[in-house]
Picture 1 (cartoon, rainbow, N blue to C red):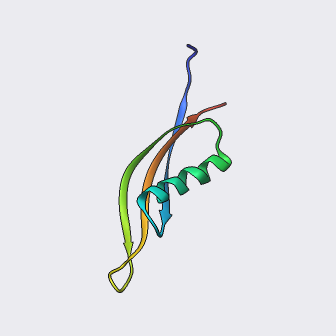
Picture 2: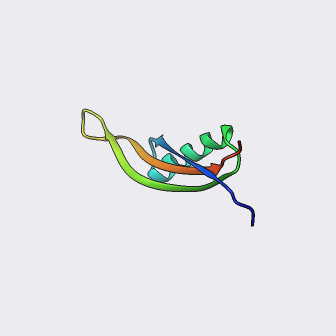
Length: 70
């Protein structure tokens, strides 16, 4: 197997519905501008809360790796 190098970036996806959709939004957006996505790791889940104490948004911090070219 030839040697490869992968770059890892960290993204934050948000969703008004769930952490799963928040993570999915980060990956979907990354796939529009990055090629050869390999692995995604959810590192942190948190919530944005409004002034009334209700959940405003779910947030997922996601580490994404892709093959480094050049």
